[in-house]
Amino acid sequence: MNTHFSEFLLPDALMRGLANEGYTTPTPVQAQVIPLAMDGVDLLVSAATGSGKTAAFLLPIMQRFIDVPRHDGSTRALILVPTRELARQIHIHFMRLGSYTRLTSGVITGGESKAHQIATLRKNPEILVATPGRLLEFLETGQANLRDLEFLVLDEADRMLDMGFADDVLAIIRYSRPERQSLLFSATLEQRGLSQITERLLRDPQRVDVDPVRQQHPDIAHCMLLSDGLEHKQQQLLWLLRHETYEKALIFTNTREGAVALGNFLQGQQQRVAVLHGELDQRERNRVMGLLHSGRVNTLIATDLAARGIDVPGVQRVFNFDLPRRGDDYLHRTGRTGRAGEAGVAISLVGPPEWNRMESIARYLNLTFEPREIEGLKASFKGPTKRNKPSKPAATSGKRKSTAAAEEKPRKKERLRDRKNIGKRRVPTSAKAQEAGHAPLTRRAREHAKPDAD
Image (cartoon, rainbow, N blue to C red; front, side, top):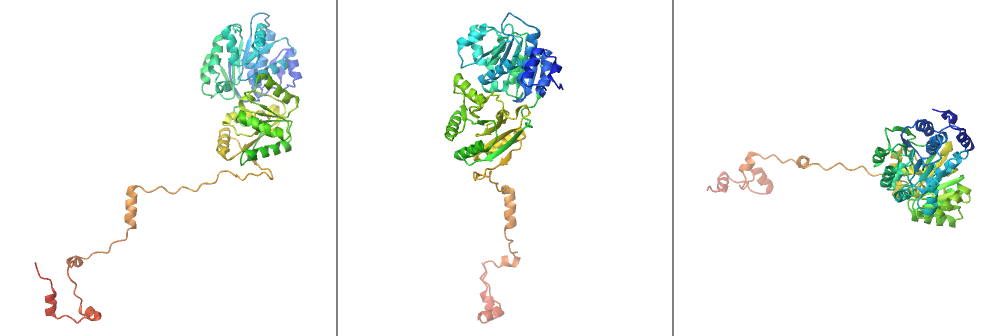
């Protein structure tokens, strides 16, 4: 494994950009991907969020364009991403790494002015970062073209499938130049439907598995706090925000309505929080992210969709106000902390309806949740009650019969002489007759006592 970026023989302009950003030692994904990408190999990469994959694909692209400059033609590299926030983050990353180069980049996403984006396309930036829907619109109208494309990168491909972009991605692949190098990055390569994209995108790809999505992040502590309900959770979260030590924090909810309601509650408690959800227009989203980056707010409440692609330095706490519905979503959330070797803490508030989901996530990711309690805010809910062992199943019909027969009292043995005397009047013996107060019968009387023959 490479121990320094200098071993990649990158141009001086890129080495200066890396030094300015504090990059010295490549992460595992960078150490494996950069040399292969520089050799022109198509790659299928599995890497978790926060592993440094953005620089892993940006540096080989920028190295190629610096070494082989072109001053005419259209876009040379396209980076497709699922969300506007991720597109913006990659563009910022490019600007920092390429601050000593003359390379140009443009961003094409929904929610922005089309006129402004058409002007960007006319400048033919070497690198284009785009979301699928808006770019496909420009390709269909002829305002964008990919005839000179040399690199096609799909970042967070699994999330693009989750968001329903599969058809758009396949259409964009058809518009792009066939003689290109393609790189696909995904947190998991077992995503349903991913194969149809990889078959059309990649040619003889080499697979790279780094920090698989289900591998526990070594720098993140996972904690759980039992709660009794919504109001109890609010009070527990408020206590954590007031007493935990952190520079920035992310709070996740499962719905937009939940994010807004929680934001109103915490703002009413004088907490410096902002809310990010999918219904905000791009201007408002940029304003919210600006507040967090500048430090005017130190806590962001977000839904999974809105938070996809957020890369904010200094996030030391992730709070799951609502437990996510899938294990992969849990990793995407908690991967916002513990970056670049820093320690992070993820705390999940678990109510009675979420217990089974928490156990499923723990099994899926092979995680151990450390239980925590807040004095004065302990939950009466202590986990599911233990069930009694089920009783043994009822016996089959055959067994029931044999059991009943065994339990039945044994009959008294019937003697032959008893059967012969059925219907006959019993004559008391002399001794018994005397005991009963009867006179003993004479032989003649006994004979007359016998019943008549038929």
